Amino acid sequence: MSDAVLSEELRNKVRDIVANVRAHSAPRSPDATPTPRRPNPGIRRSHPLPGQHGGPPDRAADRPQAPARRPLGRPPFPYHATMINSLTTPFGRFEAAWRAVDHPELVADPTAAALRTWAGAEPVESVLVVDTDPEKADTSVFCESYDVPPELSANCVIVSAKRGENVTFAACVALATTRVDVNRTVRKHLGARKASFAPMETAVAETGMEYGGISPLGLPADWPVLIDEAVATTPHVLIGSGRRRGKIILPGRFLTQLPGAEVLPQLAT
Image 1 (cartoon, rainbow, N blue to C red):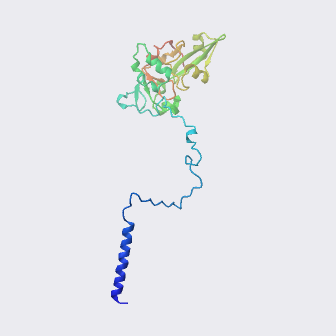
Image 2 (tube, rainbow, N blue to C red):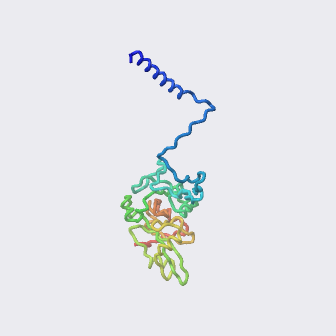
């Protein structure tokens, strides 16, 4: 076969290929039937999905919904309030301090109410609150952690006094370096036959505060609040906020103006 014949056959094949390509790449007519898509052989479903035609009903709407989270009434520790209004404490090592009346979220509800309705001669603005770790609320650990001299820290303990069938309660405030004389001084002052420290459950239930943070601020109005003379004469003293988290710093004389307050010498030794 000559070269001319081969060249002619080659040109014919090229023309056929070009024509075939053009035929398949031509624009589809609007009336043309679409070519069905071939199923993917890699996906095989023997049953319809929930909610699809012929499938089981979708039970998602019937499932119990988790309750929405309610915002906590107390801020997380540590409390990151604005440092612009932070005040300086007379002692201790705290990140910040604020006027307690301006931050009721950092104290117990009864304590916040007592500050809000304060009518004593001492200004309520002199009462400071500091945010502290509740795991370090116990006196010895607290004083060491926050560099507070124990002689400037006061504890508020609840005493149960019994006379006949009647049981009354009183609060005693004394420095952490001393111990309240319940059996003699407190019992005689209250005119009781027997006096003792109230059980933890009773103290919490009667005060509405947390054990380890009971404050003389916000106690029931008819309770005697017995204050050791050493506390009353201390320029500034640290007391509980009504919660294990947070402490209050105030002038000792502020406590002498509480409802039912009585200053007793030798209340604690």
